[in-house]
Amino acid sequence: QVQLVESGGGSVQAGGSLRLSCTSSDYTFNGNCMGWFRQAAGKEREAIAGFYSGGTTWYGDSVKGRFTISQDNTENTVYLQMDTLQPEDTATYYCAAAQSRAACHSGQWWKTGFWGQGTQVTVSS
Image (cartoon, rainbow, N blue to C red; front, top):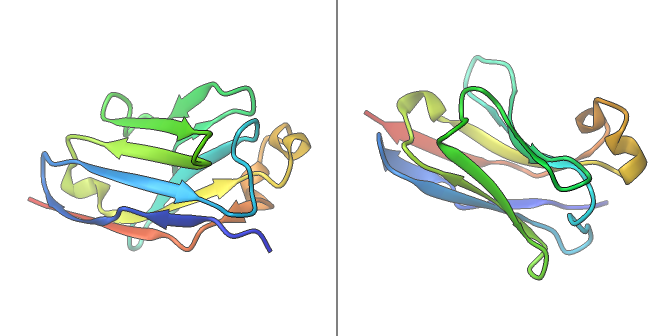
């Protein structure tokens, strides 16, 4: 079973920054589509940033201009730089990746993709 491992969560005051990491020892991110998702208590899961299989990035409206996704292929790690954090960014953050490049084109690859265990981000006002 493929394992994705997130790290970098924590507690920060509003206006602060955190950088999340997602890595795997048995999955190669380069060339596959993947994304960062988050789920706050009592709310639905939200897609916030990711890569299409061709390497193009996408962002959710709630984080555009504040969050930046990047990828280090040498380290096989995907990062999510989160700046100007606000209390409403408080959530558990997950990385997910498609099972295959073919799955990337299914339109809903996350439903069958691989998921990490999540890392908590808490932003205080």
